[in-house]
Length: 54
Image (tube, rainbow, N blue to C red; front, top):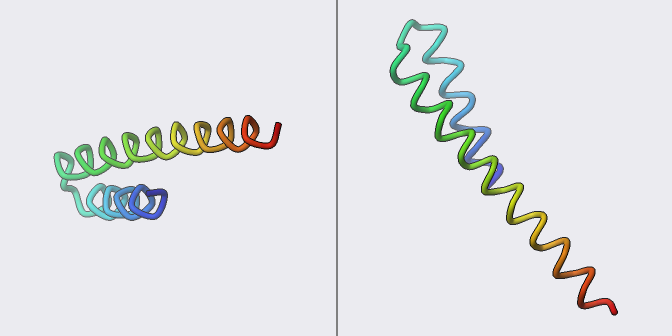
C-alpha cells in the first residue's frame, strides 16, 4: 500500500514538472488517500497486536 502511494507521488512530481497540472493533482490526491489508508491499517494492526499480547 505504501509502495503505491510513493509511486503515485512520483508520478505527480513528474507530471507537475512537465506541466500536466490536472494529472499531477489527481495523482497527488490518490497518493494522499493511499497514505491515509496505509496509516489507518498500520494503526489498527498495532492496536490488534497489543491487545493479543495480553
